[in-house]
Image (cartoon, rainbow, N blue to C red; front, side, top):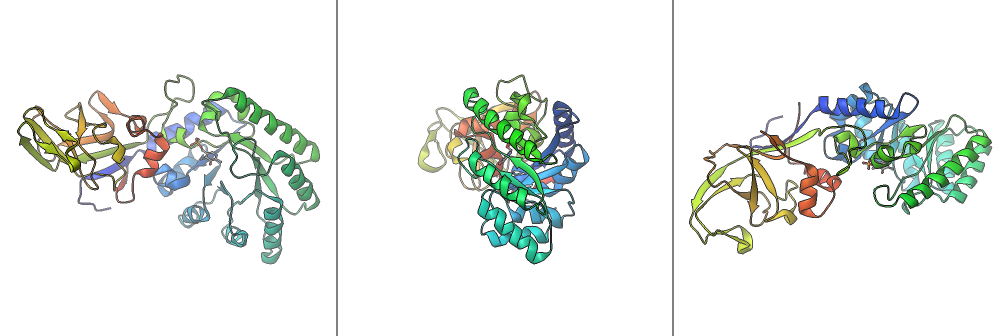
Length: 370
Ligand SMILES: *Cc1c(COP(=O)(O)O)cnc(C)c1O
């Protein structure tokens, strides 16, 4: 890929491969891994990472929409692909059938519609049933799940490949998490007794699988941990490392006098002579405007602050006393010398979570797979 503006992210497939293997040994041979590659693999690039996940221990892939699943099918991915969410309108089940994409069913009505689509198309694909154990998003209630299981029991030509739920508060509320675990276990026992012995039960996202062994069941659904993000301040959990680094270069340098305003609104004004470097990256690339006067970058192995407001296409940084040159390499996220800036630093400066920073790295930033 050709790009002219020196702003890009590097995606390390070897770091990603290592992370999948670390995850696999964390859960053990009897637990399957569904690699969650939704939102273009959290901004990392799903087409590049899907084969790496499958070659290193994942047996299936989770995405969020038919569009994302079709993109992977068209890139030649043959593994099961689960849509982690509702399919709407229900006629879209036919699209899932056409591409052999595993749909989530989250109501009795959806199960019946899927059965109609299968009959019409003479197709049979497995489905996963989503149960709401406390997330309050998509999913039948535990009582509703029993009704769907009864209905599926009467329609044995439909294959119930999975039953799953999702945690809402693993990092903040152990009591609530235990309640979700218990509801899920009861449902699993009941389904097993009904004869759904081949069905994979799954509940754990990254935080869940790191903190609660009993949440692993038959399969885990790691997302953020695959990209190398460990919970803040937690020594526990799989020893993964970051996959993405974000690079740019200085494109402009100037020495300015004291009392020089920098960027929109003059929210930063120099107090002394300073050297100001301009970087070709801004909020249109995914640098949150909230990090204006708050964030840092690495230049010449030093952490230097963002001065003034983040603009659409540029940020300015303090390069005073560094003897930096035009074209000087700058690390926005990743390592330079002995220093590093982590996605969670950006999240903290912006008052958000690492997920949102990753998903915000916009399409115009080239992903260079290394
Ligand atoms: C996004 C998602 C995951 C992965 O979550 P992480 O916190 O990134 O591990 C797992 N399951 C479902 C249903 C999801 O939507």
